[in-house]
Image (cartoon, rainbow, N blue to C red; front, side):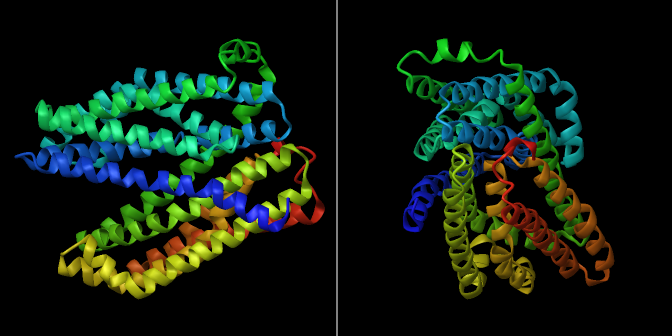
Length: 444
């Protein structure tokens, strides 16, 4: 694999992933527009609160996507067809099993989650209606995570884009039919999501099995009983689960401390985090491409190809981060104006704008190395460095900088991001120097 070919391969894999990332906020905008035109604001509040609950709940199981990608990519790199199928079948079984457990536990999970979100009585009632319908999609949502990870591991990022577009398109159409046409309000938004999730999962399974021209079910059934595969899957995903919980806590803590500084500060931080999210669309695209290509090179024991993929993904990530910083620096205040017309929020967001100007290049390394470590299934290192960054840097820096107010909060969050990059970079450099990426990639 020549350097130019590596750069091309990373770009070809990344662009559908970037586009699929962009479809997610589009759906949120449509949900908001549809429910926001109903006669009572409690409907919009209920959908927003319920959707927030499920964003955190389902994101906590995002390891199903990442773990499946790395293990599938390595099997694909070894040309191990049964191994590729094993990852599909076992990941789907795990996803559906967790989804069924979530449905069974919903009488406990939903009230607890809504209590923590602390909405008004009217809004919480609407959110409860939304949540008790939306939870029914848990097996499909988690199966979609596994399917997207599996297709990405095989280097089929365009299929992941197709699944995301299909899901969001059906969701948008059914939003209009159920809410505008049938007047179902909050329940209509939730029902639209449930139907769309199962439709996308059905399409993904059909496309996956179609790869083997009707022999998929027979071949999968022959490898599902391999217990060693389950142990490896659980070991990889267990570390990713802890790592994801730490990341969720970091964002929740940031929001909670911002709220303590006042409603205007909370709103200004929310606006600025949209900038961070915008930059992540591009950075995540290249990181996910690295997951697939790194996993395939590790599976093939191709050290030279591995190095070229990492270098190419690094180049693309740094260029993207630089462009994002340039846009935020030159047009940041104009973008803030597009997101809010509240003068006080705009003024505060402008005061803290420089933090997000510097964020993309500081975060680019951690995003990319997450992709590299997922592809190599070195998930224990991801867990350990995340814990170290959270407990050893983020919380202590926040504690020491409380007198600085919101600037101290942003400093702590930025230090956390830098610590993730530095710690993962140190682990990566040590393994690179010693040539330890290939002997036992699942050892983490």
